[in-house]
Length: 374
Image (cartoon, rainbow, N blue to C red; front, top):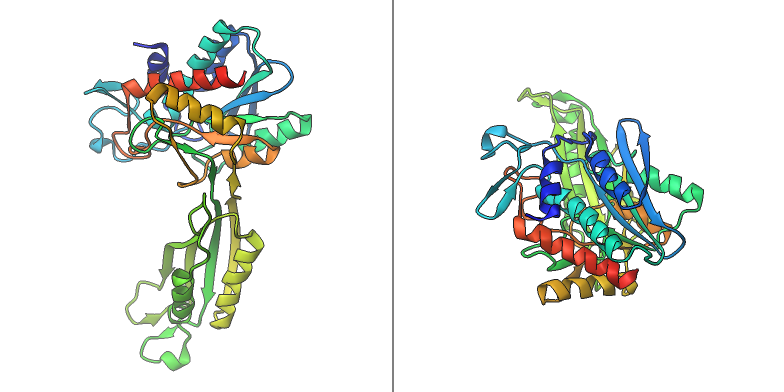
């Protein structure tokens, strides 16, 4: 088996449930140090971060990713221990197999191969690895980027190893992501007996017309590269549990995934205008997970597209679909950011897996990207 496959197994065997790293970064750092990288560990709170670099000056090419994984879910539904990697029918099973320990392994082994082939490569190769991508994402890549910015450290090109592919490795490359804006809404009413509604104010009834408008609203039509903005309710709760009591309060959580057509201020103003127009008495807290980013045609996207085509024989589709990624923190540095990884069909599920062959496919793609750019 290949070095990338073996390293993937070693990483899976470490129970790095967010925000734990469990030695994954040390293992990666050990291999990178042997290839001439300088290693810096940056720990914030409970989160471990790795910043590693080799070479000097520009251009700066950075691999980015995360060692933390989501919880396993019901163990009885797994066909094998999620932290004991097993191969069955050409698939490697384990928590993090696809998201994203195979990507991390391919980054490291591809870089080692490239450096051995071209020890005097141009510019700088860097790694930005965190254990806080699946968690709150406060003490991970976001904090490291703040530190790098304070140092004047530039990143020209960033390849995030998230599982971007849909059916076959390399069929989809992410060139951006929508923004994510969440709200925690409290609707204030007046509790009362259900037989005397005239003496109460039901917050469920008050919110209903406004909620209908929010959910049916066409926020925009999207762009050539971005899906339309969407509004979704993730949680709704009211009532005391008694069947004869009108609730005095309703709590709701909602999220807007938005394209660059929109602004944070514009979305917030629209939501609040609709609530006020429907005479909803409310309190509202806003949370921003990330603003949208987009990498247009350029050196990085061309190099990644060519690398995929050279390995698979097929040009990838370029997409901005899916959830958020840590690319949202790196793009504001002025970096071109794309995401290329294995198939994402099993991520966050029980029996998460990756095709064994795809690990080597990803390794070869990464080597080709480095060859093209450095």
